[in-house]
Length: 448
Image (cartoon, rainbow, N blue to C red; front, side, top):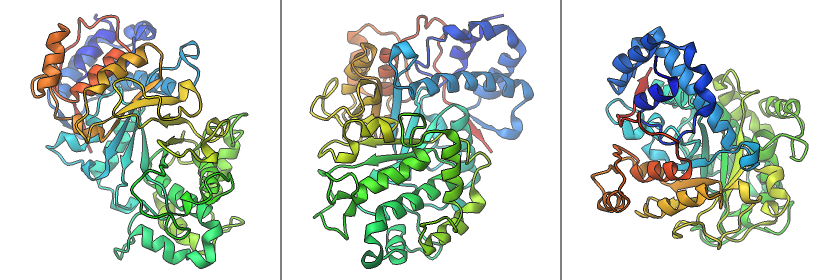
């Protein structure tokens, strides 16, 4: 029987450089050829597979593979370096409107991103409420989670109400927030209330946290108390921004002695109280979201691991500085897009192991990812990110002249059907010792 390590390399369409896999050899005898043959013939032979069509053997083999992915990806969230077992973070800002999981269009599925992507954010928001998630949306989230992936929300965060879903009557979340919690009455509470409303929405969507895109250089017009309250008094840890971060960290931030939340029991108590309208200090109108979202809470909403991240390219506020960053946040994603390697013009918050370097795919700037991948391999930085990561889906070994030349110049005999730049950067960041069993195939999408 072939070892599981090599069989899975043959079968996987999206795995790029998930691990050196040496720790999995001992598990090989737990599975038999029949399971893998069934997976190959009835699963990866067709990239669109409904849940009802999957056999027990198929499920058994995939569950074994997904378990290895989960183990690997959990190590990317460490901030310990190689000695502590930390593996490279790979992160996408994934365009919200692109997340349209319909059969026949693989690009719109989170399942189609490379399996080594540890986390992605739905950039700009999803624009839908939990009750509007289709069965395809729910299956996509379920499978992405089974692969060990985390789904965050992210958008520029200068004001309050941004990114919240529209009401059933079509009123924007932004306007609805400001109607329920008016400026004249609630300004001093806006930071905490917005954090709680946002957290309720994220948890009810079965997502896994939030990435604060806080940038004074962002395109958000003039700075005013009413319009951009999270940009006011940035050098004060108790500003609206500071209170927003501290409140979000109660539900999503890291847990431990050196963090704002000290124990898992404390975290679960915070989340439980978040959905109780009688909790002391809550505004009366917070009950509206509590009542609307509580029926959609996932079964594990109290115990699941959440994440709180940030990308701060300019004007670092007090709440992000020094010991504050590791106290409240899990990771920092650099917007050093133009640098062919790792940028030094943006502060590396939290220390070396917290930071990922990234490229702007929306602007077509793919090529910088190659040297960024090499920098991760050298230990200069501990992760890779891509803004509008879904833009790389259509890039193959043949479709992009620059990528094709890169392969030729470096005598690389590999082919990629999708996400060519990303997957090559991941391979460079954390190469496997052996690619002899590798075979390129289309991603498999599991339907409801």
